[in-house]
Amino acid sequence: MTHFLTIRETAALTGLSTHTLRYYERIGLLDPVGRRDNSHRLFSQQDLAWIQFLLKLKATGLPVREMLRYAELRRAGNTVESMSARRALLEQHTQEVQQNIAALQDNLRVLQAKLVMYDGMLQQAAA
Image (cartoon, rainbow, N blue to C red):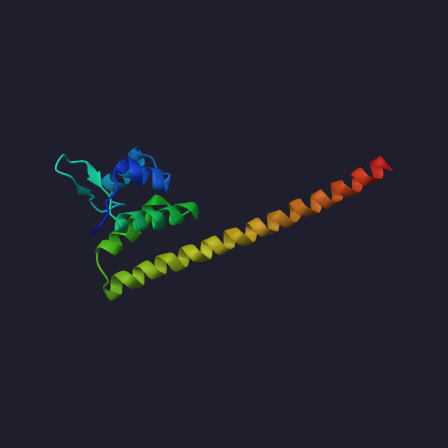
């Protein structure tokens, strides 16, 4: 038996607001979500897994327009063209994330050097 989640349960699990979940569905980031007879949304485990992936893309700085492109390619199915394009998009983004990490590590080294400098200055001032 498949377990479905309400929009509130999905919001609580993902950290997204119900408004954002509706927006993502409206713009096409989410496929049309199943509905109850009363038209309330029901999210499947597959929907939840997709949302979690979108959150990873968002957290790593992928613009919404690129997430939309990826979603569009995903809906095209597992054709060679679609899979190749999705892979290329993720490969490009991975390179950008790696560059951002390298820049952050460089910035961290500068901050750590400043902390060491202030530790030395404070020790001299206390002596």
